[in-house]
Amino acid sequence: MPSDLRRSLGLWGLVFTGIIMIQPTAPMPLFGVVHQTARGHVVTAILVAMLGMMLTAFSYGRMAAAYPVAGSASSYVGREVHPLAGFLAGWSMMMDYVLNPVICTIWCAGAMRNFFPESPVELWRILFASLFTFFNLRQIQTTARINFGLTMAMALVILTMVFASLRYVLAHPTPVDWVAPFYDPKHFSWATFSAGTSLAVLTYIGFDGISTLSEEVKEAQKNILRGIVIVCLVIGLLSALESYVAQLVWPYGEALPDIDTAYVHIAGRAGGPWLFSIVNLTLIVATIGSGSGGVLAGARLLYGMARDGSLPKTLFSQISATSGIPAANVILIGSLALLGSFAMTYQAGAELLNFGAFIGFMGVNLSALLHYGWRKRGLWWEWLAPAGGFAICAFLWWNLSWGAKRNGLLWLGVGLVWYLFRRWRRDA
Image (cartoon, helix red, strand yellow):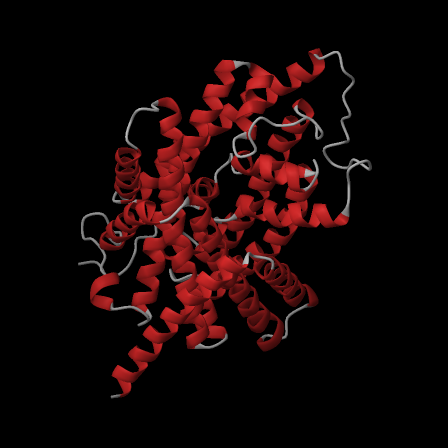
């Protein structure tokens, strides 16, 4: 049985995998909420959020170069801060990766009911959880090929949306304010813009999954840093473009028929019923990619934590001899996605996901700050970037709802009990 993961992913395979983990259409489901909260300044909110996430992405890339192992946040924090801190960071990120396919299963099942309203939602949940698992039981090269195809298909839909939106705007008799999506003095305020920016950060959630593939990437010390920064940049620019044309078609001040599916209605205005249906279907496909990416990253995180001794090795550190992947972990997370889809709502899952993500982000930024800024006495930019990333993530974490923080802290409490139990058994 092989003891190591196979290094078979090149830089661009890694980039396509990361783009699918986040989704090229990431701002579309969030557009209505950010549009309403930021009072129309979605584009600027996404670009400012990109700056904060780029700092965190840089920390991930730098730590992957220092420690090219599969555990990601848990490995970095455990080595640089403290083993307990590393365990809790990994425990938090594990919740993040498990909840991602859970909420994707819930969302896809609900979206399919829009096409087949009489069908049982339970059937769709079983189907999508099984699909996420099946994709990730293939070899990593196969997963990368699937991701490439999904990326190309979504890019075509995005281009179609951009073309239809510009054609609609140019043909419309009402004068267009081309600058308003960036800044509209009539509606701008720092309070609403800050709140909208906090929401817009959700556009980038998932980029950290790239670092869990460190042991499956060729020249990982260079390519993880390059890949994670490229992915954040590409997603940020694509998201800004998608939001810009949408705000031209539907300026702030006009009531949206439905906040949650606002972008689909904007597509309908820009291109008619056919584009409405295409964008709706594309968001389902994009969410399939995101859910599959969550299973992919979660399986590697469990593998890394088990190899470090944080989880039972006999259960979580086994590599399949045929596919070269931690297949048992993939099946476990796929099963949890199915069970979780019956146990919680989309909103509850999304709030808990954010809690886990920001704990992990803060840990990685702190690790980079200690490793490059303190221990290696690096240049000013080597500590300024992780310090800025930590501050932004801490601010966002503090502004989560009390319910999310309460449930997240309960999850951390369970992890702490497990950690102390392991220590007690080892010392007994």
